[in-house]
Length: 404
Image (cartoon, rainbow, N blue to C red):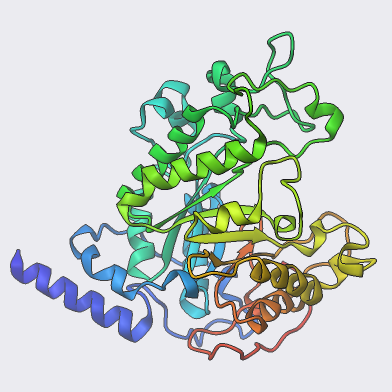
């Protein structure tokens, strides 16, 4: 067995050095020149590599050099994952943000956390072979990040009504699209998220990212009907979010993994908590990394003086991140890793082609930030928006317009 282990480690090391992945493909001369890495069916199989994992973290990127793709649970649990792995093998991408719990309340894999079992979250698990798939990411030098949605959890809200936002008649309060929310004043909601995070780290994830760490962003008249049962005298949305991200850090931080939070991009320019409890300074003083979602399509007419923010990807992202950097002075401030737009919002123009995506990356890197995440809810990414693997930072791929 010792000989087998030694041989396996040498094989893995050679594969990682020479091809950036145990199953990385050679340049396929048989493929059409126009074929893109994310469009090719790749026969990669998940592998169990638990006996070699101790050497792998040394080969993964640091938090400040993460270049990630968001991978939803359906994509992670399907053959599409191997297309995304191949895309990472051939480009600058070195990390995946994977939904461990998304905004439906469903989980990536069957959990041993008691609350998850009790509310039936395991019955909608998306990838029952998740451990083997995480091992495959590690073998390819891909940094796996576990994304856990906190306050928007309709499954938890419906199965634990005592943890939920209510109407005056006791019925569940729902947002404009009909989703029930849990009560962000309730400690148990955050402890559940922390327990899932600790479990995810035991599964092989190396960073945990918490999303929906806030109250609902609904019109004032709708929020006026919401009753938060766990709210105590003197509590505010800001105080609740601030105390609970500190709770998350105290529960998960001792495991040594980076603790990161997704927040609204507008948080960096707002002078209040925008009614959702998010204040920039509260996050950068607690998190290891803060991820502002600076999607140009989400800024209203007139933002930063632009009549059409969605048509100004470079300028909007640059202005938003300049504000974020300006409010992050001090030696203990968290790193900034923006979420960038890799999708087209409905019929809103322009369509986001590789050019618009690359412009956002350029704005990020022009400000000295070397880490970012691309968000597409369908986990579909355009190969031409990404630099080839091994290309120096600052180089720009040849860009053409196109579709996803």
